[in-house]
Image (cartoon, rainbow, N blue to C red):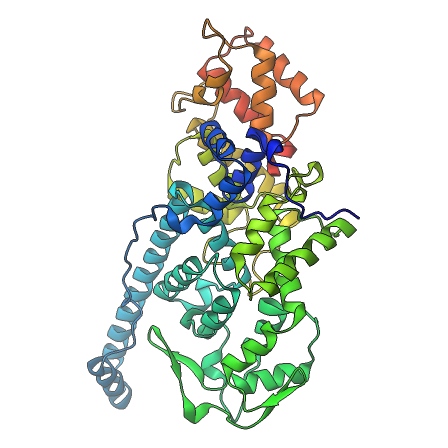
Length: 494
């Protein structure tokens, strides 16, 4: 069997391959951006996206760390007085102040969600945000459990900072992360009564994969290694009085292990590289439920690179994005767009307005992806789970909203008074007299919007639509074509 990770021949990296790379290694791009990437050539184009530290970063925004701070000495004294004196009025006052802080924290969370979505839309380093979203689903932590928006944004910053770096750094860092420590009850992991939650998820979801080479005894021993690992306010805290320093036996190795040694034992297992590379493969290449022999061969090659590079991510991503397999026809329209991919790709590719960010966040929730609130520690299932009758309705309507500015109950594809100038999408097709050939325009627009060669019946449908409207192409008709294309089942894929 041929090596699927063999680099794509340089002369085959054209506009359409560059567009595919922009979509998968980011959230898409305009025709101008795809042409610019194609002109760089395969190696430089991949390096441009993967080595994004060389590009200007988005200006950071600060958030309030003290909304959900621990009580001050004065506040603790008031709480004690209310308890001692059974002072109902004082208790009610303390409760109201707590509720006010909780309300403010929920408001800040909504601002953080909009801030991150805006980053995805505007960032000149799209792979950075795409990977941050990937790691957010991998090291899944939900706000409703921890109820501290600053802990969520601090975790988000940590994932972004290390998104294309060392997986070892990510694993060790998440063990020290207050949001994760609280989410997985590490503050309850004490030497006399070890809590197994963190150890179990570290093995099952973060490093090895469910049931992949470990036993219940390994989980129990790992939990002992993590006893005393907790946090105070916004910082990791190791409590030696609650740590079990005695010998543990984990995956055949024995010693007086703590959390760092536990993590390194897991990272040393071959299962770890295969598990992580499988998840990366499904995220970036093909999320079909069953892997083919070629898929497995590609994953094995990526896992070998991962181990050889001591768990550095850049060599793996570079190898993947340069491979013939990544651009193969069977891997086009092979990943179901997540709600964030669906919306952000439309904005970045068509250059349409982002409209109201709060509305997009709400739509993402209705489509099954609320930022900073994955459904469980397993993250989002992704793939076919994104699509059902309810989410498909929202998917169609949110795209019409982005294209036209009209909300679902009032939109009219031919009344795009709040639309945008989409003619830039077809500027390269204009003839000497500035006119556009309907068939050429339809073929190009379909391929650009769908990311693959359109089926003949799709071309016929679009041509029939144009013919019914005078066979003339202007901005309103172009927006109407995009609205029709976005309603196609293929548009849900990338």
